[in-house]
Length: 326
Image (cartoon, rainbow, N blue to C red; front, top):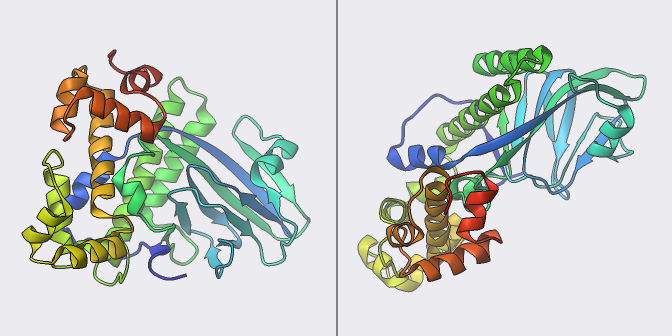
């Protein structure tokens, strides 16, 4: 895998400014689900298209792989996140008969603590597997630019200290059956995600050759991203952005798309819709005000764009989340 598809988060902190902080704050985790499989060799399971998925190796060793790509080896203490839920396979070294994870869990009947035993009679691998659902997964700019896999390496068979502490709290809540345990677990999952993403950013910002992290280091594309995030309501055109950063229109458009993975105005649309979705969730502001503040000429234009991207009107979105009425 290259730096565009896997991100190893192990390096020291190196603050890079408001832009990344704003992106971290843009995600809004709605719910999480956990499983605690204990798998005897040989074993292999797949997870098809899903939302954000993660795996923590508590004991043993295994690998994670995407179709057509080299497997990434994992040992006890390692933590991987697949931010956009790309289909992947987890297996031990001998696991060739691949079973859908949810079918495997269904057959094995997890207990009240979400633990189950499956696989063969060989060496045991224990995992903590989870899924995260974000309110704004369809619009969030951070989820769109993350690499396919984020890896947080352990050391000497143990997870990073912060990861050990967070996982310990998660397991305590899973075991407790206390009122509000699910809400606490979701907040802890939020911590897992944000800390892993921050580590990925800090470790790879100076070395990434492709993707968003390379884009913000670029002397022209980086400032353009800052303009789009800082002033999404402006009536930006590709030509105007190119002039602001001192490039020709064609060169700017090609360079932006190459690094970010989307044309400039497609990326701007995602920023605007995410800002609007955040307002819909957290305020009772009128649609006309939200539309104006996020760069749409009218509430009707905003509603049309929102429904085209999210499959529901702004009012339906608010009601589905139990947010402020429209």
